[in-house]
Picture 1: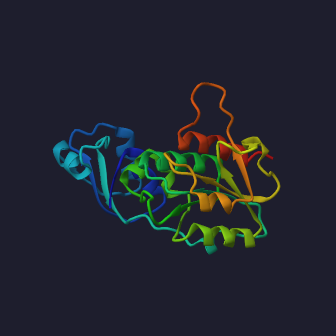
Picture 2 (picture 1 turned 45 degrees about the vertical axis):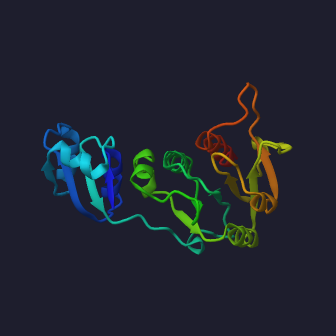
Length: 232
């Protein structure tokens, strides 16, 4: 799997993900980063920028590109602990890699226990997601669910409150439960939550809109909600 960007590569090295090949632009001048590679005894090959552009389809790679072991999904049974208060985010068909990357970055900063994604109509853990996450993808467990309804049932059986997000909700996002494990569902960028997912929720919340725009980008909405989730 090809990934790129200094922060992404740095976190890969810290997390000891296997690097098959690391390439640097032959004009790379970030001596601090070079010293970091040396301190970790990481080998690399210097190549022309055109080669890096080819590997990344002309992405903003910062002169650092690597071929690494692909990211793996985590089993939900390895995350959920009914004896602890936990916070999960469930993504219902998020297709934009920039949004997923931004959500992962905020989730890592807020200490969210895991992100759940669907198997269909959902962007994969790709290079763009890794870059936008600024390396957070290395630290946030991502669970893939073939059937979100079944996953929701599993969470309910493990003492989770399932919270959906909807513009027509009666409660606001600062009404989130503070003493129980919760899983908050964020719907797709264009359609929001699917109806069957909405019906499976224990309660619905909204982010109030005071201007002329009636919605927020899903990653922005997610950021507000995640920091509300961790309030005591």
